[in-house]
Image (cartoon, rainbow, N blue to C red; front, side, top):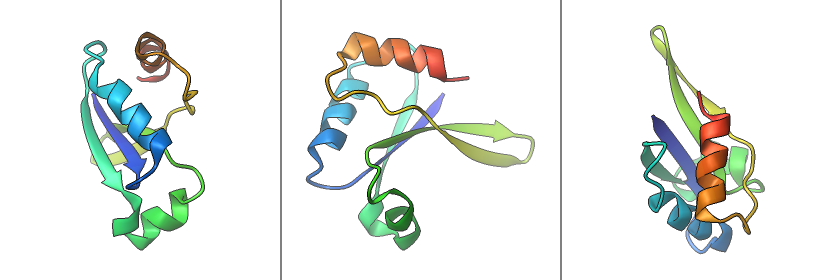
Amino acid sequence: MQLVLYSKPGCHLCEGLEEKLTQIDQPAFDLEIRNITTRPDWFQAYQYEIPVLCQVIVQGDGVIEKALPRFSPRASVAQVARLLQKYTV
């Protein structure tokens, strides 16, 4: 499974979610961190929403990103793992 985390430097919520995600073994996934300040389209889309976690889904010849529900900053690593299992395809 491929996940993308839209983030920006200095965002404590983003850093907290990234730290929790790096501690999760199951479900297995590859995590790509995208800094929204590096592309105007990402910044426009996510400047007020970060952190945004998306699952990358391959459909036929295309690829789509499905935004996952926002996780509470207070969620434990175990809770984030359970929510990933619940909301990912």
